[in-house]
Length: 109
Length: 114
Image (cartoon, rainbow over all chains, first blue to last red):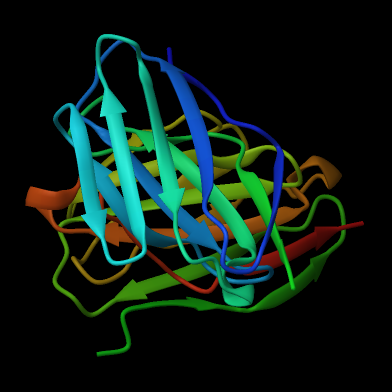
């Protein structure tokens, strides 16, 4: 089976940098994805790591270490609109995703 | 493109009633999935399909049926609603080459079973 652990809540101030960690246990592994979900909205895809290392997409970066079964999402220059829930997800096969329980990010002025 | 659409947006059912949640996508995606989201539980996979005529069970399939007669549509049927099925239901689709990481989600159906 699959399990993912991420903090339930993280707080930060506008302009700061925040890191959301994710550790996973999975029987099969194609990569680690990150999704953002604003309150009441649909999850939207942010980033994906198939290989070890850092992937950068604008203010967001994602990191993966396969040997440590660990990854993180890094958000820079935080804005109020970044307040949302963030989910890490692993793919045990080529057609499904297993999601973590999510981290609620609260950005204050 | 409308992307992934779901109807209805809200629904209240009584215990024992049946209903179908509709999902459609216009991106010609091969893969479609249904998830439920409960507070503090993340998204859990109910059923998924890798193409028309092919469906499979996810993590929490009991009490739900699916079929996929066309590429565009993937309805989810609740056979006999129970209060434990009160949840937000999301449909998602993905292309075959990105199916292991990038899924497009619909706006969700908020279901309450009394």
